[in-house]
Amino acid sequence: MNREIVDASTIFGFWPKRKADTALDTLLRLMEENDISRACTISARGIFYDFLEGNRETWAAAVAHPQLIPVGTVNPCRWIGCLDEAQRLIDQGSKLLRFFPQYQEWHIGQAPFRKLLRDVLAPSGVALMIPAVMGVTAIGEMAAKISNPVIIDAMRYTHWAEAAVVMQDVPNVFVEIHLGSWLEWIKAEVGAERVVFGSNAPLSYIPASTAQIEYASVSEEDKALVYGGNLRRILGV
Image 1 (cartoon, rainbow, N blue to C red):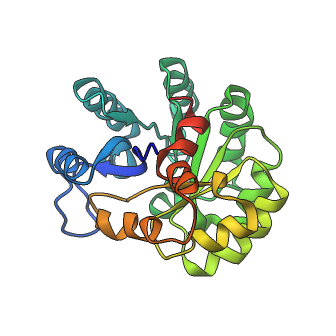
Image 2 (image 1 turned 45 degrees about the horizontal axis):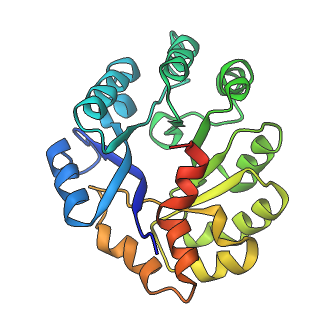
């Protein structure tokens, strides 16, 4: 059984929210120690400071370390250059764009993101990752209008019932799982093919994330899908 791990959710670079070792070298070491063969990653500079510089830093890291899958981002609050940068990322070959409204103080229902989605993201079909704090139902309503794969990340226990109903109704919605032992339940509700593994490394402890999959009462085939098979299919990597 192929148990290759492809991580959907990692970051590197200075993290201003709390003291943590989030250096690129730390991420690479943790990947090696925990048998993660590939990881989607993004520079924290693009989240908190300048998305143009952050995207370039992310791509440079991926060029230097092919086990990294570069994730792009833009901040609709900044707006100037937002559409052009999103299009540039897609043209460059970005498979996944990730958004951080919880840190940047905007919402997916606001006009700038709606325009970004309508004019650039939806026509491209690029995969999107959006945090559950935006409202799982709201994310589902957005996803129902487009064909892009939409991965909901940063799920907490209060989101799971809502997510199950949304995923039953909207087939292009997926969930990233790194908190809580929800795999058995979500498999019963919508199937293991709708779940992707993300560790949130180096901010979170990788073995805690893999343990919930490793010890779940699901088949080895399902574990392989969650560990990497689903994400490879979604991103086409």
